[in-house]
Length: 157
Image 1: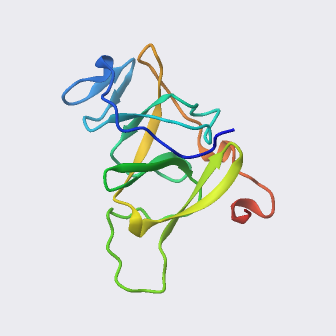
Image 2: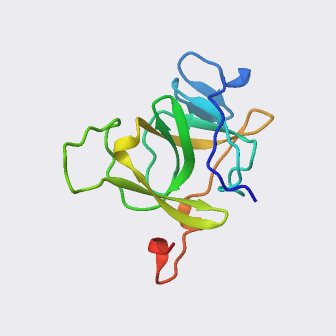
């Protein structure tokens, strides 16, 4: 089982999604800055499978949503936002401090939790869904569907 969070370079959107301002698909509309990425790995399977194309908005995800973490021009990974976090403007410059600002993230196959240091990121974008072959967009269940509700919860390793 491959659980690495690798992602291929950004792809152009399928022709059905190319519009200058908003992108209608069925009854949904997508922002003009939307882009797609092809995911490699199965750490978010069954929500996002190896090789699937995801639709991404260049805006911060909320708790329980899936995000794409960027460092410079390279995607670092696709994970659920699983812990409390402050929505901050990236990139962030932190003066010398003993405080380490991090996002708690999770994968679901198998369920594991990680910390991503905010100071290394240049962007964090919200994954809207998975682009199907017919051009429709499949939604992704929120993290609460998978969340470990044991006493140790998300702080176990």
